[in-house]
Length: 102
Image (tube, rainbow, N blue to C red; front, top):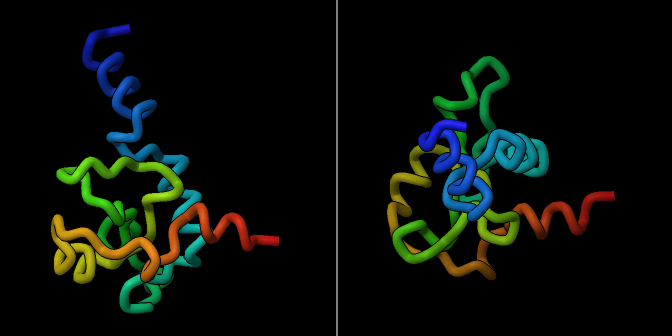
């Protein structure tokens, strides 16, 4: 394995990079709806251009891509939040959504 691939795999294991599987789980759990403003992604929109996985505790503050720290956010809300910390009690996380799923 090349050093670049090894570094990327290591970052994914440590939660510093959002994996494709985690991204898929978040989109499915939140039904393509922004957790902050409630807008739903249009079915014909490209996923990478509309909603994305958002870390509630930003990476610059030590937040990782783990189920207890991620939610779905539209580009506008994610940009407005920037690197500020949103109170975890005010936002549902992937871990919350998977706990209540039947």
